[in-house]
Amino acid sequence: MNSESLYQFSTLTVILLLLAFYGGTYLMTLGIRRKNEDADAYMVSNHRIGFGIGAASMTATWIWAASFYAAATSGYTYGVSGPIHYGLWGALMILFIYPFGRRFRKLAPNAHTLGELIHARHGSSSQLILALSNVLGSVISLMVNFTAAGALVSVLSPLSFQAGVIIAGVGVLLYTLWSGFRASVLTDFAQLVALMAIAIVIIPAVFFAMGGPETLVAGLDNLTPEQANFFSSEAILQQGAPFFVAVLAYAIGNQTISQRLFAVNEDHIKPTFLTATVGYGAIVIGLGMIGLMALTIGVQPLDGDMNNLIPQMVSGYLPPVFIALFFILVIGSLSSTADSDLSALSAIMMADVYGKNIARGKADPKRMLLVGRLTMITATAVGIVFASFSLDILVMLVFVGALWGAIVFPVIASCFWSRVTNQAFTTSVLVAMVLFCVARFELVDLAGPGGLFFELLASIGGGVIIGLMVFGFLGRTAGFVAGALALVAMLVFATGFLRDYTVLLASLTAYGTSTLVCVVMSLASRERFDFATIRERVGDYDAHEAEPEAGEAIPAAASLAAQR
Amino acid sequence: MTTLFTFYVLVWPALTLGVLALICRAVWRDQCRARAENRELV
Image (cartoon, rainbow over all chains, first blue to last red; front, top):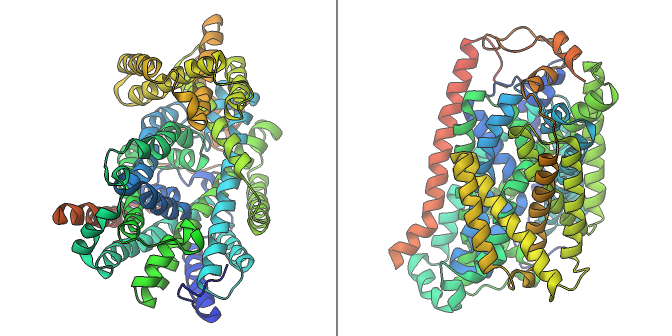
């Protein structure tokens, strides 16, 4: 889409900007390149990433191009509270995972993926369900990011959408392919510094260029009562609540997060994730304010497309140098997420598929590296093709979201409760998926008893979400109490009401069903799992020199032999 | 109202600046520690 209403760069300028960005990033990775890369480092570095690099990488990874567009859209649609209802819940996804992440790390200090931990706990079927959900999520993310690159290039220059997609895909692949995760985290730092610096400049620049506080406050009269209300129920129900429901699901279902949980120095997990929470929230909510500013002065999105809001505001109110900065901001955000997705996908194929299910304890580190690199090339090609054809991924997104919701309780319970079995894990996820589809696509009449049935399951789901969140920070008793209170509140307020919000109803149903089935089947089991065995079963693949703090680590040869 | 709205919009870039400074300082420390221990940063 080329629009004459937006500032247009020449083809040469855009190519130079992209060349500077991807060329600079590539040159950075040359500094850490090794002739013979280590398979473990390719997936999680040395398990001792410092606080600064870790926080930068987590923040940059979680901010993708869609974050800006969606936050601005939320500000434009829901008014004053809109940016908060997008950015806050996204930030909480990072915050709420770290207590569980510390448990994951304690159980399997040398893991590379969450799937490896689940494999050691349950076996292949549960692990592959988790791996499948991770793969689908990362492929979708890749495609969305490449699409954003194509859209940006085509909106701001004479270059075509496909050209933007291909340049972004090839650029990201080039600097990530050789060193994998190590390249990803190093470049994340540089990309984050650039995008934070640009956000710090652009938000006040737009604010004052539009006329400053007086003009914008005067424009608040243009808002509807709901848009002007900071506690707008419409914003909460339409934007906040579905995001809140997804807080734990996105975090558990995303290998990019697990990878960083296993890569960061164990003592630094908390400060790393707390800093990333604040950093993500500040940048995304801040850029979402541009949507709110557009609303107050009555700007109409170009061609009715909300994604044009930020480019339109930057293009309309700021000089070309700021548009170039905005261009780098979006390219930086989408590239940092795309390289993390490539690293995540390669780790899943290396560890979960090849290491655990094909080599079965006899993994050859060199072959693992080959698998990882081939995965990156294939994933990039798939992402470029899907993005180029602008495939409709809505159905895929719906299923991935449901799958992530369905696995939350089984994954977390498997790491804390010794009675959960492989059968309980697998069955609960499958039953939850079936009932999710019934609710989501309204395969039964939700007006009658069917609606009540799903509202009961959804109420359990609501209780589970609150209970798990509280459990993560305050422990089991507080978690049970909070979960029970949330369940009662949901039963009182949601029955007869939630059926009108089928997306929310179906998502909560996935949580509630998987929890119910998993708990019932686990209680019926006589099995007790010894968590200490996970540490013995999950180890490094490559031979390393002993690290000073790795006194408890098992030597690579021994750990390989111990792996199933 | 004007002050409140200005604060509401501009507090986010200010927070971003704070986090950026914190991260840069921490990375510098990571780099020094890695150098002292004779290992790579990542």
